[in-house]
Length: 181
Image 1: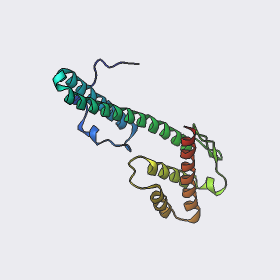
Image 2: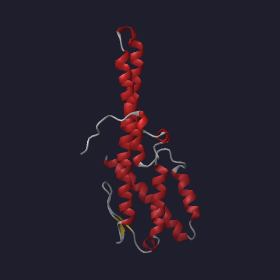
Image 3: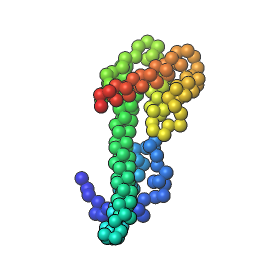
Image 4: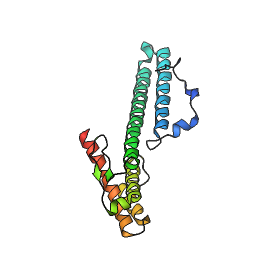
């Protein structure tokens, strides 16, 4: 593992890093986490330079802000790692199976597909992807809205049923994941 020669400074980051939110890609979440750590480091430097017995109240406020930034950094980095694991599991499930179902993920058993479900595999995958997007923090639509809108875009009863199946299968996977954690 290579180690940075110095702790990053705020000037090392683009202004775009402050626009990152919980539904941003994992790499952007990691970058925001590093930015928050750089902010915390700057605040600690400021605190150390100014803290005297006479300035204890101001020092306590600054220390509380540092704690908030460190927590935010930790949460962004953890969210990026979880999103990366979830993305990999979902991609593996959507792309990695040519058999009769979706392979098991880390915390969910394999989910079988048969007959018309296999013939409408792309619609199943669309439903799974729509469920994942609707469950992300900061999602534009609620899960029930995403289900209704996605279903309405499908032509034919089997395509709509396959979309619904994929949506529900992914919800099931997420429930199994949450229950196993």
